[in-house]
Amino acid sequence: MNRLKTIIAALLYLGSLATLLITAVSISRVLAAYGLDHPATLGRLAPAFTQSSLGMLSNSAWLCGGTAAISTLLLLIALRKAAMRESKLYWTAILAAVNYHIAAALYAALVVGYFLLPKLSNIA
Image (cartoon, rainbow, N blue to C red):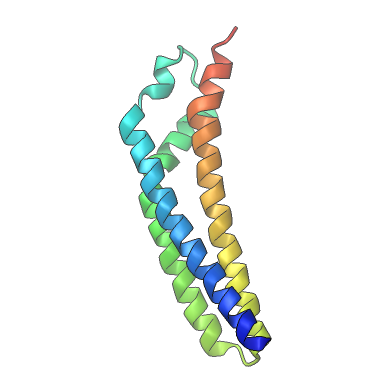
């Protein structure tokens, strides 16, 4: 049973790193396909969240890569310093959850800030 927990935790963490990589690639492809001026083509009003999310999304590759690097460094420190096996599994799962949340936040900024809010602000 302990071996199964270790395998699941490792797959969870490796999946979160793959999610960060896929997030960086897909967001940069969307920005390359539509361009950074896409929200301006939807109307004259651009919400402040759109402007801030454009700055964040244009650096999504650096954000995802930095998150993956820092997460891996923290995991190595946690695996080295933690004494109990359950503690190592706990920190692996926590870091995987943080990676998944950062990827989800970037996708939410893309959908809401890049596509949805510019359309909604220019309806009226």
